[in-house]
Amino acid sequence: MTAGDHRTDASRPLFYIVDWLPPDFGAVGQYALIAAQKLATTGREVHLIGLTRGPASQETVPCGAGSLSIQRLHTRSYEKTKFARRLFWTLWTDLRLTWAVLRARRSHGADVQFTGSPPFMLYFAFALKFLRRARLIYRITDFYPEAIIAHLGRKPLLLGWLERATWFLRRRVDRFEVLGQDQRDLLGRGGIPDDRITVARDSAPVTITGDEQPAPTPAGLSGRKILLYSGNYGVAHDVETVVGGLLEHHRTGNGRFGLWLNATGRNADLVEQRLKALNVPVARTAPVPLAELPALLAAADAHLIALRTEFSGIVLPSKVYGCIQSKRPILFVGPTSSDVHLLCTQAGIRYAQVTPGDRAGFARALEKLVAD
Image 1 (cartoon, rainbow, N blue to C red):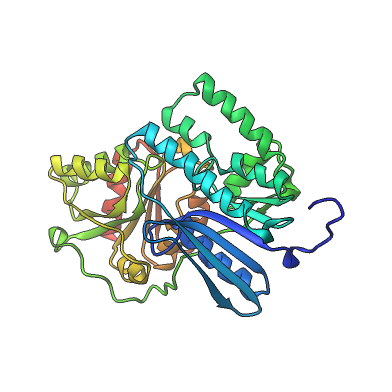
Image 2: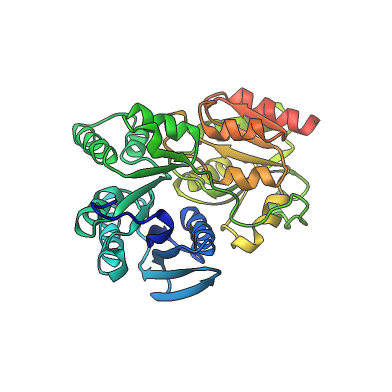
């Protein structure tokens, strides 16, 4: 809050910056749209700004006592395998989103909320703190550059400097929203006062009762139990345990399960290729539209969530909320320090946790799901 500005949260305009907005696929944008609509119905003036692969647009959506404007900036996707192009795309996108707020008349003295998608928005948001006297709200979805360091398995000198600079800026953010207790703990270890952190969990982006009619399963998995992975399968998600565990399930177990990848991401490609080379049953489909998500989740005999140990607290797979609400069993390959484990153990559903690297444990968990 700027000096002499005594407006309450409800009376301050909110500018919410994200990456992909629906109908484009992107979990962060899906959740942001839901949150923006809820805030607007309470009487808040909300401006949601994000990306689209379609034509640029701006619309005002009726939302009860408040107002919601949605601005979509046209852009093309980047090539994820090309690091230089991906970095340029990220920085240029951050700049465009920041400029959209900077040029908005109502942004002076407003709240500006941003996330970890696109990465490094923190650096650009600080321009708004000084140029527009904005109050910054950082909704942590992913930690950068920690996610890059975790993926590399080492900390080059340049990334070490970037990490220190990032924490310097984080300590000057006005307020944080985190997805779970694991993220709150990470911020606390970095010197962020607890009274500036709020745990604000997401929820499934559509209503899921658990009683939906299941979607048809891919022809290649007909007659098999379905282990479903839905959503993004990127570098933060375990590959070796999943591939090795499924292989062991088919070599030494009853081999009843096949993997349905309704997913995007580099590791989705890798898992598909490796399982096909090993003749392990796998089917790959594009992510379904949101309206079809409940039926997709209902088709699972078990849901797969996978997280590499080094990404605990840095990333929280958002698919966990829909998986829990679908009432199907969940197999989590990941550390018990992650809030995925906390949420699943509190949910009262059939649940198995496997430590990354334990391929035999993965196979045993599948055998137990068949037996149950």
